[in-house]
Length: 100
Image (cartoon, rainbow, N blue to C red; front, side, top):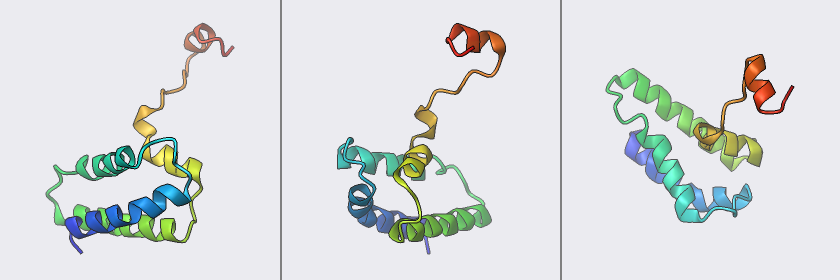
């Protein structure tokens, strides 16, 4: 199965995915753009083995979405991990943020 076929299938699944996981705080168009960003971030890959592995992982994720194995928090963490600010690790940063 090619990347384009998997992408199209995932985009067809997106409205049900968006509705079932209660992601209504963002418009469907924004959600589709996030899905597209997840696909395009690996656009530089040329090794067929790596691409096939990623296509297989995406198929497994789609099946897990269909069977509702994930919860909404897991989906948000997976899709928006780059938007989450990293927690401070050293004492001084924790102190300055009011955590210690």
